[in-house]
Image 1 (tube, rainbow, N blue to C red):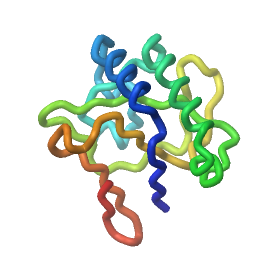
Image 2 (image 1 turned 45 degrees about the horizontal axis):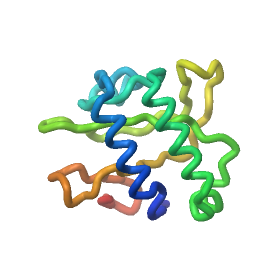
Image 3 (image 1 turned 90 degrees about the vertical axis):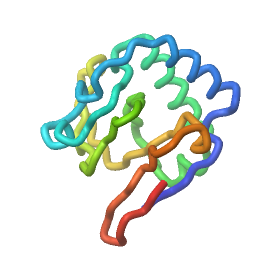
Image 4 (image 1 turned 120 degrees about the horizontal axis):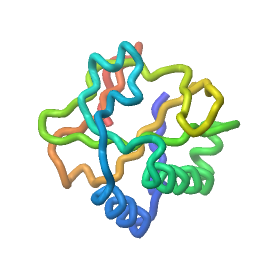
Length: 143
């Protein structure tokens, strides 16, 4: 099931996110890839243990907690801290299946991840490409 949760972040929050990410240090996105997805992942991400990822991740979790739609659809017991990815020219994340079990460098527990979510931080009109393609038994859906 795909669910669109609009306006998770306010315009002011988005501006803050973009300013923080603009000055942050980015690393190879394969830092968090499993064996299978490492063959398809060509992007950059904020290091999970960086101050920027921790701050922005906490803000995402707070924003999701404000969303009755997200909460009622997901019924989360726990939400794994988000990863922040970016894509430049030629970068892509090909076909893959998100990992079912995740471990975080600052959290000593392994967490089952039954749901995946993507939060877009830029207006689709501001860039070319970047569609999220979800392939399931009903075909391919573009977000």
